[in-house]
Structure formats: C-alpha cells, structure tokens
Length: 256
Image (cartoon, rainbow, N blue to C red; front, top):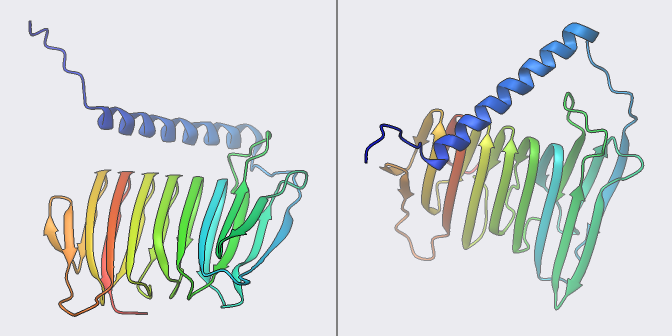
C-alpha cells in the first residue's frame, strides 16, 4: 500500500541533523554575546613539550587524538620520531602521551580530552608537532572539533587515517616519499583541501554531500578519480574521502 510518505536516505538525515546542530550552536553563541558581551575564558594555558627519540626502531605507528582544538603537523628531523609542543587549557589534566617499542616498531599515542568545563567558544588545545621524514609510518588522527593542517613533508607515510567531526582540513602530500600509501579521510562539516604529488599514481574514491567539488589534475567522474604515471616502480596512493558538508578541493601538484 502506497501511503505517500517517503523515508529519506540515512545519509540525508545525518546531513540535515548536522545542519540543525550548526545553526543551533550559532544561535546560542549570538545569544551569549548579546547577553554578556564578548566571551572570555578564565583558564590558564599550559605548554607540554613532546620529544620522542627514534632510537633503534625501523617502523612507527602514531596516533593523535584531540577532542577540541587544532593540530599542525610539519616535517621533522631524523633524530626524533615526533617533537613539538602541545598548548592547552588543562593544567590539571594535560595530554596523555604513551610510547612503547616492540620488535623495532615504535608505538606512539597522544590523546587530549576536553575538560568537564568544555568551552565551546575557543579552541581549547593546539598541537604543533613535527614528524620524522624517512621512517615508514602509519599515522592516525582523530579530531572532534577544530582545524587540521597536515604538512608532513617527505615523511614516508604508509597508512593515513583522518577522522574529523567539524573544522577545516588542509592535507599536503605533494612532497610525500614512499612506495604505497593507503589513505582514508572522513569529515563531517568543514572545507577540505588535499594536495597530491604529480610523480605518483593515484586512485581516489570521493563522496561528499552538500558543497562544491573541485578535482584538478585527475581524470574520472562520479566520485572515482585517477592519475596515472607510466613508469616502473612508480609510488602509489590509494585514497578514500568521505565528506558530509563543505567544499572539497583535490589537486595534483608538482613537489613544493
């Protein structure tokens, strides 16, 4: 029996719920400002230095997880697996940093949770970190809300997993050096810029909901794109991109 009621797809429901959440959050912020003027947090910031020496390891598995704030990842040296600073407003908590090495594989986990007095009007934490360049590394980044600026330089990434709730993402892989990179990117709300190296063969599957899509330097259509280099031992990038709301730019460029 046809009742005339159509149930929308699950993805469409999720997108509309995200839109409602963003609008509600914006209205709440406007009301707060109107009632109390400009908002200022009374918390004091703390800086936690990060210095993880590479030692004798030959491979690395790195996991970064932050509830709210920003992550800036840049090229590092050959002495340290990861170095830099984490600036936050959790004097009583601080980031949870765990590093172990087993059978010449280093496992690094950095996790920063939001405090109970979560402040929605400021970016609570900022991670300014650098990653070793020549070591095969599996990198996982999880961000609740905030911006990601991932510029790993010539880092030999073998796996890349990015899971971002809300915020903008810039991922520059134009200088990537490796043989095969498996990448998966999931973003809820925010713009996304992905730069890929011209000297690598690339296969990308892209799905985005609401927002523009600009694909430059890759062939294909309808969410499946590729860039082929016909040379022996050409490095390969396999990429899966899922975006809910926001503009997407994916571009093949020369090494910067």
